[in-house]
Length: 400
Image (cartoon, rainbow, N blue to C red; front, side, top):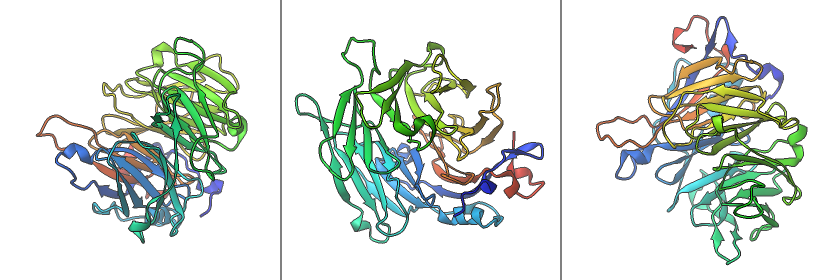
């Protein structure tokens, strides 16, 4: 696949932004409750051909989206949304909640080449192989565990690989660990994120997210993580005892804890989104005296995580909302308002992910409902956001 600038998109063209749904999968009926069908997260594989999701039924599902990627790469115009049914390429069931997962940086859709690190409640971290051709071969290849002072197992709440795939960082309640991927077992380094329980220094609380690491700019040697106490911290990848910076999200933007963290603009800016907050905040790591930019999103009264992501250029921020819409923000714009909004689903969009190098967006919907008469929308969709990819005058693609 080509990754040149010719494939980077413009969101506003001809007086309006465009979005077209290329493919759609409906969640299969599982369990005794319709709530089990709701998606919680979605991630593109590093080669941009697979989408891994996690649902409320504690299952990881992997979908083959290569046909949609090739459709865009070849410049073909689809006749409409391709309905892909309900069956994923691969399903991996778990007995407990999947707290976080991360694709191996060298993961590929070719047989035996797709690996994902996953953290399941009350389990060590597992490095699992994903092989649709031989589902029985999709098994745990390595385990990584951290223990506290009483030798009790710690459950990882956030995961992130280094770009070279040699290291794996894991966040815990009050701890941060580094594992050598080639040496399963105990971490090479385990540090407390705050010196003491009553200390005001460092990062307090459960580490809720580790930002996907960048290999360029100021972020090259740093790992960014955040906690449910609305703290953000930057650590050295080579020495976790060296905390480069830590700060609290301003009270007016804090919400109920940071749940999403992304690097942007060539590793100079880090975006943070919090639960129950109508703001997404960015900081320039070269000047941490205050937020670099603040954008608004619809207010949500839910504690559900609502993901954000950044496109391949590092310029545009994409955010899902509880009303089923998706907003796109331009970090070159000073007003903090969205430059494009489109209705992606009929239910909340807790999961979304931008393609690693194409203007393609994966969104997944669903949330828990307590009204038995409510018809939930639990689906996975692949969208094209390239304005020049769409036929002129197609009113069904226009968004406001």
